[in-house]
Image: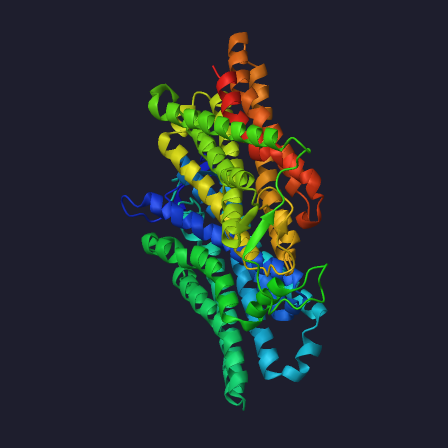
Length: 615
């Protein structure tokens, strides 16, 4: 037997190979897109619940406190393995280092076990709220809720700590291929060299004690809840009570059923991993995505909170009644900042810059398509950047020129919302593409020997698609929220296009949620892109300075200098305009002037900077 083999002098594996998701031939790209989309939905849905519970005092109750904890867990649970899964797919390299694998395993089970404790607390909360409503407020105080949540998190930590340490200390000498799409306990123990009986016994006990006791407690509490609901004289109260519980039971059935199938067995390492991988998708990917949508769709309080958040009054008009107001059907754009008597000159300059932008960026796209020497990763991403620049400027400049010629600065409501959506879609996607160009330059200069094997045409296409989808889903919900606000107070937008700040300035409802989302997108997307770009260029400069040939140094600097010019112009101006908690209360006069840099100047200069500086 394998347990009797001598592993004292064996060489432990330094990395593992993950087999990956169960695939159907020819459907790999579809599976990648689905996983990526589900992960984004999970982040946005659960992130929205956390933000709403923080912002809306009506949701600062025990149930929603525990629900926000569940959302934190779902984000942590999926983030422990999905980013690595996506990176492995894009790079066509399924390796994971030993310590990364053990860390992934630890956090995966830490969030997973804690989730069952939190679901038990939600069951307890619903039991007390429905069966003991008079004593509920005195029992479930904020202090008690905080202590219960802390106990759940610490319970999850100490439940899996010893098992994780034992798993990490095993000798992995027989094989390094893990038959799963993440580092799960069963597939990892399957390839471990030592005796795994203690770890498997602990895993089985953990499943029985924690998960079974959680399920039993949840089922008993819901039996009492159903009995109490059936005794209620009012049908309306019965429906409301069932509404708050039905969503919880859906989550319970999906989660407990799939986890029992996978983990409730004495010998997990000898299970059929092909079936387990398919079932694992239910509780690792699908359940965390469904949680926020199930709770928000089925729960009237959350729906009411969203509606109130959108209808709440802004600081200038708290006393106005916006519920029955007539929404404006068109806006008036103030236009470009101008100097008296220079209107024709400004119009001519904008027209010329727009034509240069179209011709310059169009030429790059055409050259990359026609010239086989330019069909390389850098120029592929550069052609994507040119498409973005054409789309970004076309989102607002034609309307700006038409308004000037017709002396009519109006724009219809739906046109304004569409303009804003495409403006931010192209704007956000641009940062993802610039990050990819930084990554491409880093690999080309710092890892030149492996560059062609890493940055294949398939990998480049997947990275570009991820950038476009990332830009789309980053601004989708924010765009929907902005369009649903009541615009009744004014219809004059103090800008030359429909930008977020000036539009929110005239919105009648409460814009805090939209502004928080806008600030988060700017902070996460723009700042993370900037940090990644700067770090990659530090490595690039360090590598260039170590080159023995002056000619090679000059050529490397030539390919990077143009990129850095764009980076400083773009990031500087955008951070000035958007990196502030309340964009609608900013100085719009200064913002309109700075907006020239990233809306008109940068898209026009991009093709000329790249072509002039690049040999």
